[in-house]
Image 1 (tube, one colour):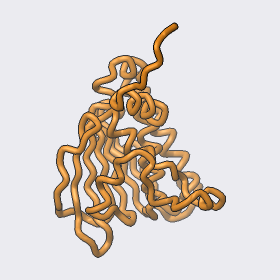
Image 2 (image 1 turned 30 degrees about the vertical axis):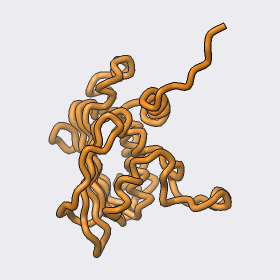
Image 3 (image 1 turned 90 degrees about the horizontal axis):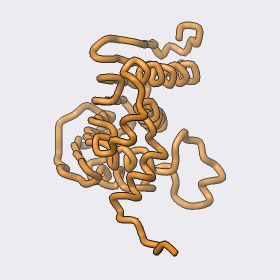
Length: 207
């Protein structure tokens, strides 16, 4: 009978992350939802090579405090729940605290963030570990950059489509949020070229 063994942390975190971040479009979805939950009125998404090389999501939301940046990368760390009773009245798109932790497990991650009236900070992580956490000058809001998605998981990378295929999926995600939230300005760029842009004026007919 095979022996039961506990998986090393580096293995199970990547397995779990693969359930949340399956491809660039799912990373975009998670990050855009975080931006909307932070009260953003402007969300800009930039992709390189369909998001396989780099994903950048910038917003003008409430930001993350310098001291909270390391916590934001931990599994199930969230500002959206305080206790089990909050599960009965969830009003946010996300609440599990898995998005950033999942990205840290499968990509090189950099976050720059500053709350309105607060100090800015930068945190970088690679291989699931924080490599840098310093004060940094930045505008209010949050900028998340994820590089080389699944770079150490070639079995996952091979299931990703071409750059154009991954872009189509990400663009579909952005259009859905643009229709759902016409009051928010959304921009999607690919390799420096604008693919989608809305003005956030609240008119769904203009999406």
